[in-house]
Image (cartoon, rainbow, N blue to C red; front, side, top):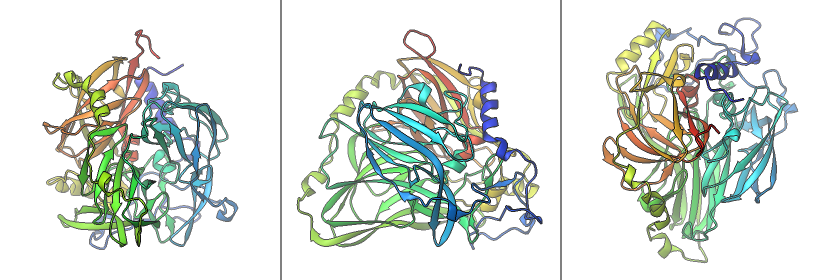
Length: 565
């Protein structure tokens, strides 16, 4: 029986967020006999430590998976495998411990089927598969099939669509794929730990239309991530709930497909289609392919109405983009995260570039020249036909308005003072962790991120909207810049698809179906949601620490007969 009472659902979710392995008090600071202690986060030399913060520690206990395990006894993780699946096939999927060596350091992490990332599933649009999942990590977990408009009972949300899968337990999912594109799967229990440490994988759904995308020489699925480490290894997580609750946990080691050394070799003139997925806890990447020409083709749930040339690809946590790149000059092309970073201590912006990988372009020309087709920006009539039925709703009044904000209470006074000063100017996007010490100290005990219904004043899980299958709902999301340390938020809606109609009153001139979209600080985003899929669903910020700090709501889509799914 599904839970219908919001407060009960929230209580259940919070209980799962602090299971038995995490139910202890205090915050360890390295006292005699402790096997695990908090360590201060790695600091940029340009962000000096304030004396008042020395000796401060998060007000929760530290936690790392596999504490006390001998890494040599843990199986070494393998690179992911591509698994082609036909309609009706069954996949055995296991969450377990793996051993990873990164930068000369060995860690105990997690993996699906012992791989990093998890298996890449390649299926046809319209297929339905069975996934027999087993949990062999120490925490409860689930699998959420992100972006899929699948049956509600298999959405993987604990307390709403299923009970969590306890350690040693199993659950059978039936997963259907109604839309072509790129999707991903991950836990929906303590994903700030489980997802961060390797529980994620891609799904590529192929259209039966052979001309769905333009011609390319090859395809590459890239999962972007980051990992927070110091000289001693993995930085601990919060046991009872996340720390880094203000900005989310930014890593300092960039990963592509789970590794820091992505390499690709191509021939001169080769055209590559990249499927990009951002699985980071908090980091929005700005992906640049050197000076190579880049064409954006698709996003979360569909192609764009028309292809466009782009200089970079901003991609928020949980978003996906499909781009095509032509490497027409011999040499090395750096795949980078190129951002405008901010130093809150100095109050200044500065350019920052992380190298994510390298593409080596040989002198040998590719056998088939696709230059003419690559130079053509295709108009996607199929997408426009699909969207056309929704255009009468574009100018309708807003059905619901959400205001994004934060409440902070109980942090050290010096942190509160610094945050008050810092909020005198707030950048629309936080591309980097510009206040690592204050962010590290903040936990879900002191920080509550908020989705507020502007009409009723209700917040987070006290909101529960009800719609009918077939409803077209217009939502307005405003990211209030006047809260204490506002931040950009990638908003994810489960089980449905939506169009971003406008930002700050400016209509979107090139539409694409989405399931996740970022709202910068001070911005207003209007979205039109196609409520096509019955059931009980979540809407939340996809920064993992913000989700666990309360930034979520539930809504119901009743089936066409008016009954709950």
